[in-house]
Image: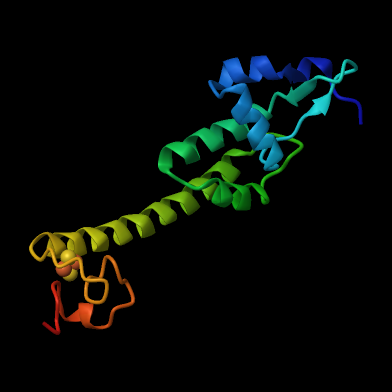
Length: 146
Ligand code: FES
């Protein structure tokens, strides 16, 4: 399939339009998040719709979504055309669920940390922050056997 030259952007142009440094674009390409073709002069050329994929990566980064999770989601997105509004809604819904799980985990950690502030034992056995599998920590913060 021959590509429309008007549809192809040089890496500098992609960087300028997306605000993503060239080095990061190289990295995203290594991870398979975006793809390029080569010009006759062996320079990278990105199809215009890659800007949408890059926008999704930028959003994920702002949300603190790890690139490994982005990779997983991108496997279900088309590489030959821009993600549709429906694709974006599906991804946004998934990421919102991940943020909710993370918020719950952070709330839990915050409660444990609050208990540790009143304790200060830093016990490798008793402190739930240091020893998350500790069974006695379920009885409350602070050392249980002292
Ligand atoms: S400092 Fe964490 S339980 Fe004591």
